[in-house]
Length: 434
Image 1: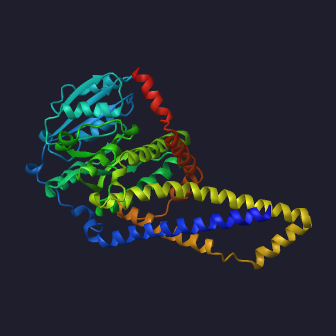
Image 2 (image 1 turned 30 degrees about the vertical axis):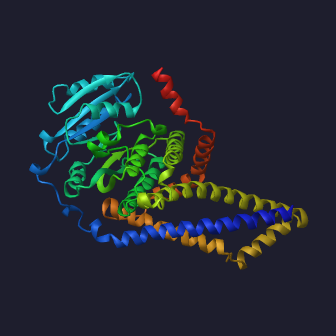
Image 3 (image 1 turned 90 degrees about the vertical axis):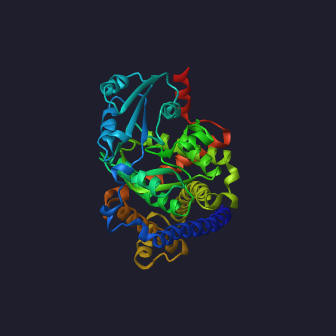
């Protein structure tokens, strides 16, 4: 038995070193990219962003797809109407996707607003509502917003500034942030979303964006004229469209200072289902567009962001199993020691060891280095998000929740992808359509 433990332990340590090296390499790559493009981020003078003059603002139509969003839709629409953007150039299309609550009734409160069109249709999923909005838009630019989100007043102008100053950009992704966290789960998500702002901007710098956030994406309408409308995309339509754009050589940028706000998932089961769907969608969409992988024709996306995504999935699963194995091995060895020397001797040995023994293994130092670099990334993401970085309990919650629960949604997503099984909530949508 001890020989088996030793063989398995050595095997897992080799993989631990490999995953650790690659992970540290990626984190340092992000840091180097951040330093290289530091001047472009303009972190120290956040309010000095170049704003478009009103006469230079192009027309843009935002679709608000909603299913049973009676509690949220009013806040979403009002935040868009309050945007710092010319009223005669901003149009909204509200689409009730077969809601069973009062969503459509609340939408009709805006029927006399000249900026707004209202539609209702049988339930078909978010992407069908988005397509209805695109088809009924008359502007050069189109976008959408999740019906449980709100936008910062300057977000749209900042995103449109990118389109006007960079004619080659075809899509712009916002910076999604969690606000108003009411529990430790949402506080943990706030740290996660903050980190994503940093990571996505680094991907944007090296032209390796693999997903335009579905919370508030903006596109040139010609994107849909050339490559078609949204598809189901394994219930991650935003990622499928992004990869379709990449394979058609359409460039994307991330607006790290254009904020759209969400509250995050309220509990563990909801967070689990959401992330399982995201990971499943990433795996399936990447396999659908496997031509992008390690193909020089498509630039860095196939050499950086997509491989990093797969590495993160399998590294998360492996490190969790590595932890479980080490805990089991530790307890098993304690059990053997107890069987050999008895309980009182075990306490004495443990006390003596704790006074005079310090673990100096390579794993310890690698782990410390990993967390130091990771904390540096959290610090940078905080500076990018609100111009300051401070410690919060959300960081501790993030480490605990994502270390203990994330491996389960990763493993389930991989299992579903291998078996070609759609996430549970996909079946719920199919049932509603029928």
